[in-house]
Length: 236
Image (cartoon, rainbow, N blue to C red):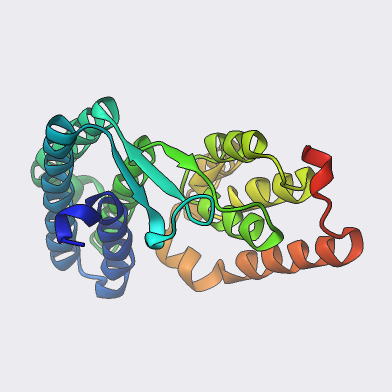
């Protein structure tokens, strides 16, 4: 497959990889350069996807080259492609002009964190590409949906799981509920807590101190699996 055929995935992967890179660099000027390059790439990829949809119709992309129902399928239609262009275009234009404001309003040692959050917002824009199908129902798939829910809206993921059937409702509810809250902006409760405790918004601190949350999610899931088992009939 050519690079152009992987644009639906790259729209997510490039900003997602750039975000932790800005944390590792820890310098505002370098983080700005990484964020600017990623935002321009996102805009170029969105425009290319829009043109592809205009020429060939809706794009179907199987994540990992695994066809549904074994893999997650992205579908990019004309509306989602247009919204991607709109969001990526605003981000690419606003970022260069926001640098002066950031330098005035944000402490210098936190500049790189602003660019980290900016890149994560670009990742969220990829959720505008609708996911049409999930992998075949199983407990490993359900465990994985929890991690996906940390960065994607868990409501459409849950809806797809309910429609496809075969999932254990209790395990699914735990996965998308706990998983969606592993990062502070993944749930309304997390946003409310972060409003009261601004330090919760620190991406660097989350990377240093937030790993027990991931371990707790996995441990809780495994404990439920051992004690309750996998009961897909609950959703049938």
